[in-house]
Amino acid sequence: MTSARENSHGNGAGLPRVPSIPLSDDASTPGDQSIGGLVRDATTHLSTLIRGELELAKSEVTGEIKKGLTGSVSLIIALVVLLLSIPFLFVAFSLGINDLLDWEDHPWAGFLITFVIFIVVVALLVFVGIRKFKRIRAPQRTIDSAKDTIATLRGRGDDEHYELEPRRP
Image (cartoon, rainbow, N blue to C red; front, side, top):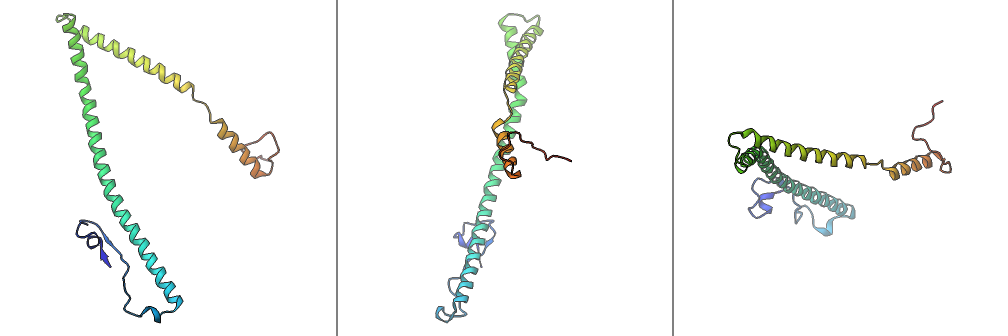
């Protein structure tokens, strides 16, 4: 057996050992083996090759999954930081309204206007969401197909009325 490090010309840091197929068999020469022995050897070599390929694929996929997880964690942390910084944007927006309208004596007014704007945006999003939910329909073609399949399996494919549950006595 050789290792994955040896198979990859020294660039296999951390990879597990992967079985390899021997290029020569010292036990006998090709002319001395029977057909059964050749088939057995071919089966053994094929099995070793497939196991080696699966081990190589497993080690490569494992490495890529680790990279993907690291990238995902970085993106999740960035999203959390972004979400935590949003209130500062809203405070700046409210204070900007106060400065724009020259209401330094009443800072609550800018925050109230910002709150009303958010309530209007939330109401619009709720309205759109409810309309989308009301448009959801049952998968009628799938239901009909399932009923047809059940009726066919029961041997009653010519009936027009199908039941999903078996009849009880």
